[in-house]
Image 1: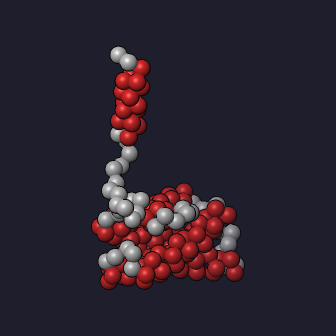
Image 2 (image 1 turned 120 degrees about the horizontal axis):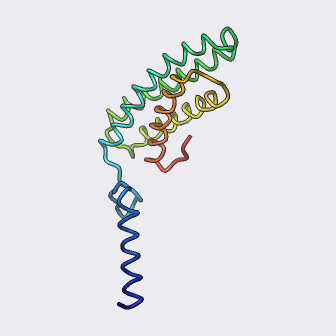
Image 3 (image 1 turned 90 degrees about the vertical axis):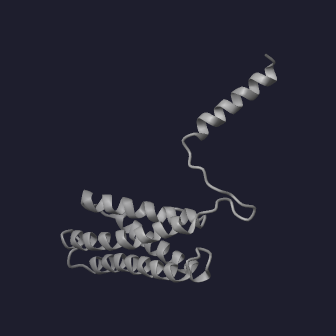
Length: 155
């Protein structure tokens, strides 16, 4: 067996072994990764649902925290409201346009991710219940999945 043949076999084996755990995604000449409309729709739907659940739990947690009765409480609640409202609008716009590349959808994605970044800062700066933290982790993972679709920085 030649050295070149063994090297090629070893390289092929490494590619097959390392590549077996990764998800296969389609590519085209214009984009690195093609994401289906259904996949984006799933992310958008989960964001709208989870942001509502998070908002309710967040408001309860804020009312039982050291922030209760402060201006910080109102600002924090407003940020959670902004995120939920942006996620609901994204769901509506995406449902209407059904095209992730539509400028109206992209604009709403930017607004949703911006609102998510505001909430992320609050969650990092304050200690909340484990349940709220788990809800935020799920919501943040959906926000990061949305950011990945548009090749934007994750939270």
